[in-house]
Image (cartoon, rainbow, N blue to C red; front, side):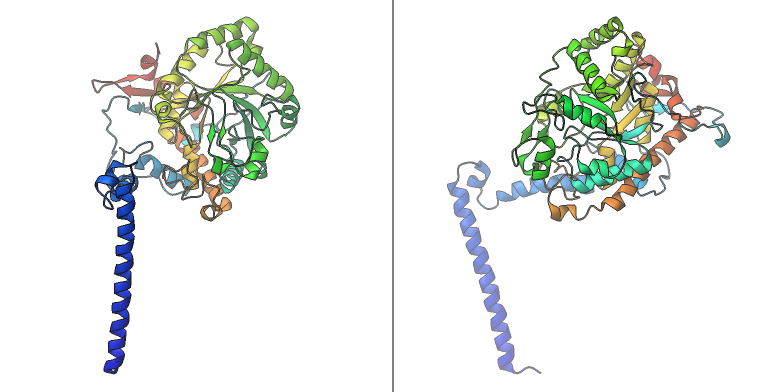
Length: 494
């Protein structure tokens, strides 16, 4: 047994430690109290010193508690738990079967339902997905077989290991990877995937000293066999009317070198191309890039005002179909980005549900559907989303956030703060350690292949041999009275 003096000494030690801790805590509270009552910036802290600070803590924690504990499976935004769970399971090559019935509200207006065939196709009757040629009139046309690809995510906005995983995964899945507007990095090249080089309004990667298009750099990129197409970005889903925004803490030495911008300073792209201010100038730029690179060229746009489409397509008919863009990527107003003004993100532009059928109708009207390939983008991350887009007239579907989920994104909504907890949108080396490019590349491949397989399942249930044979007659949309009408009827006059 311990002697009484020893026990007393131990008790005195812990008592002293406790008093010191309490004293330190009291001193800290006193300092916070004085700071709160003397500051004039925040009324809550001044009126309720110390305890008022919990308001800001709870506000921050509320996002995470709602996501994991309080939100129902299909009510969270921008992506609900059911959508994210499908991507996670597909990326891990886990079974995507569920039990006991659908949790969707099948009578909710806008709900898409596919029309099953009484005699669905057997395996022997199905066909593999046929390649589609883009830019047959260019010197180097591109004929990808896959219909689901990786949309634009710039190096700088996302991290080195994220780009490596996407590049290697795209190669294994035989799909393309869009570079985003941040230029071509070594990590895009390293995986060996087919690439779509995006030319943003700041022309990163192809800009001269004045920020305009450098013909020499464009020719050099055209000689790169991995670059299959060039996409001129007019506008982006979450921020139409606003250029790209890359916070200064993400502009590292390497990012600055690739983009041709100063280190550590926020990179704000112009809200449009200085040299593209009309339909004529757009067609002239498409022709110029196609001639210099020899590759197919198209443009990416968010549809808002749409009268200009008639002007564009009429001018193409006037000039001849060879003047047409080889593809048009339709981005949605509910598209995503790392940083955008809320006023644009919440209120600007049309959703893909309205804009995609609208543009498809216009291409039909001007007999340009075969010449101009249509690419759908914006919140299309599940097989039903992709199958719907193919029914509407899309030739391809691209996704960015779907592949971010495949990389492990948890929708922490910290893309613009360089604090992404999964290492995808941060340049913090410590946070990047959790993102193993080799392992995540397999998840990227699994997600792409899982998507192709399950869209095929929908197609075969509708009685067609492969997904690109889906048409508007194969899907219906629920109306306000709870009944459904065919997409052909719903979108006939869009």
